Length: 90
View 1 (cartoon, rainbow, N blue to C red):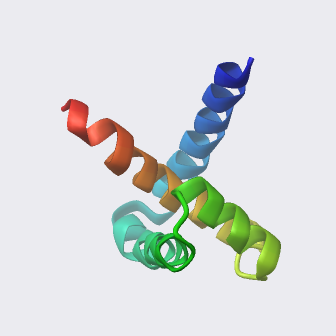
View 2 (view 1 turned 60 degrees about the vertical axis):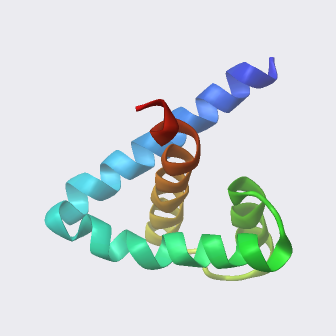
């Protein structure tokens, strides 16, 4: 049951990333990079994984309140997920 929920969450993240890429085009990497950095800094500061870090950002700050920022944080999280979990397979 949890695996199905995890897969659904990844699909939502991927959809957010695709929306961001379609909207930002060639500026995608430049715009998303600070959001990746924020997640990584929260991970490091709290010794937690990327999912926990984004939850902390959402719960404890106003950084991800605006719809566009939610999309950008979701895109950043997907980039981190791929880097951490999928790149070693390639």
